[in-house]
Amino acid sequence: MTLNVLLVASEAVPLAKSGGLGDMVSAYAAALRNAGVDASILLPAYPCTLERAIGVTPVCRISGLPGGDARLLRAQMPGSGVPVLLLQMDHLFKREQLYADTHGRDFLDNTVRFASLAAAAARIARGVRGVKRPDIVHAHDWHAALTPLYMKLAGVPAKSVFTIHNLAFQGNCPLALGSWLGVPAELLAPALSDERSIEIYDMLSPMKAGIVHADRVTTVSDNYAREILTPRHGHRMEGVLQAYAHKLSGITNGIDDATWNPAADPHIARAYSAADVRGKQACKRDLQQAFGLAVDPFAPLVAIGSRLTSQKLADVVITALPALLARHPRLQVALLGKGDAHLEEAARTLAALWPQRVGVRIGYDEATAHRLHAGADILLHGSRFEPCGLTQLYAMRYGTIPVASRVGGLADTIVDYAPARSPELGLPEDGATGFLFDGETASDVAAALQRALEAFMRPSTWHALQKNAMQGESGWVRPAQRYIKLYAELTDARPARRVLADVADAAERVNVDKAAADSGVQVVQRRRAATRSTTPPQTAQANGAWNGNPASAHEDIARRA
Image 1 (cartoon, rainbow, N blue to C red):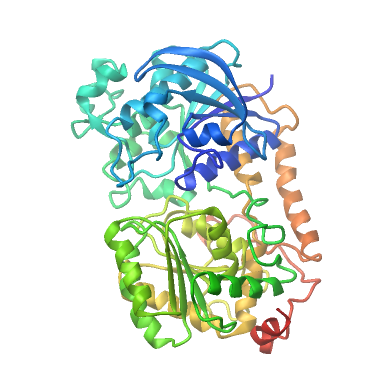
Image 2 (image 1 turned 90 degrees about the vertical axis):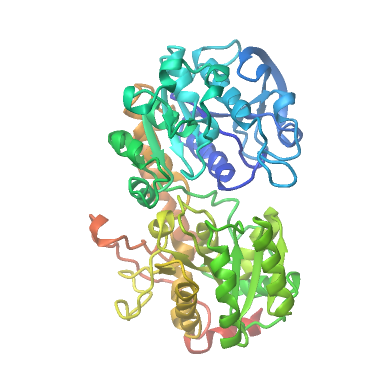
């Protein structure tokens, strides 16, 4: 019996996106299908979704959802061909934005909107005409978190998995909405009186519903799964998570390494790879021109590409930058993002004070994000907490070295460079890919960026960092393997084309293929923290030389660009 998995989410690229959730769901679904899993995605039929989906056809009507009646549509993802089911409820989803109005205020009916999505998922799992019943329903983040509860209430035999993408956003709402959502009164009782309760601090919590009622709970990185058990990162949910820690695990996200590939990226000025980085200099010139910066091939160019919010340390970073710009006369900054109005204004002010040194674009678009990662030398990615983070993975794929907070998935995916420990940077036993820092002050950010700038001035060191970062495995093969093993604990159904061992073999083939593409250079394996390391580092022998004379590499690349 072929394993059938229904992913339930509020967004999926390119049909709808507001952040990393959409990237993850789409890339993960494609990876599951490549591994022989019959995977599909259920998401709302936003106007943008209906415009971009391929082959939209009606399936059936679903009545009696919390928000009313709905039409279920079938379509495919453009490009990947992943099957999608679209829940059409125009009175709930026909809006310009996904979650908030044009002023950034959350829609007042978001609870009902996404409870309808979760209820529809449970209805599909129970069985609707024209849709195969799934073996596993995998709900993502608070928008789909009521799905496991609705499945239990309906007596659905399928198993449920719930993934926490960001515990800070829980979808909590007044308990009075419980009857409207179809939640039995006993499940709204104070939590201490019934372990099945989804009440927390006198609120109804979809996030808690997912944690309590799913058969398995995952987070999007190993480190984040540990962090959320603590008061610092638990967002008042740590007690609940500790009670259900036996079914909690972390699986670090991958990225779509076909879309994010500097060797074949249509958005960037010139293609390049780990074996031939000359094209990156042309991308740097393109980025400087696009952001109004002075065209200088030797200037260290720092990218900031994230939401302008307190979570992302945007307030601290903006405070730290003036002193750094004054200390380093050639330092440049390109900022792409949007968020809190006062931080957007602070970023504009910084650009006005440092013309041709700081360029700011308020907003987000995919093409500019690709150009940002391709053209920058350094990615500055501060964060008070980071469940996984995809930005640093994109940056490393493009040879842009991250300077990031030592939290969550950032600590899982970046190997810190410490010259005192690693004098022979670039040897296989090292594998450093960036710079991690502790703390949340302007001086913490400045000190970390200073470390990176000092390394940037040593071309052989910098190119070893770039080489390690670009050759690291960041795709979805290994994470998908881990999820399939988790599914196998819940159901007897298995992937059609590959047994689990074949998926493991595919993970090894990824490394071989990448090595062949990079002129025979074996992939430098990331060094993990010693406490989590179970095998010695693999040996890697460089059969192809890094371009340029290490003593004058920056100048050599600039001349040949």
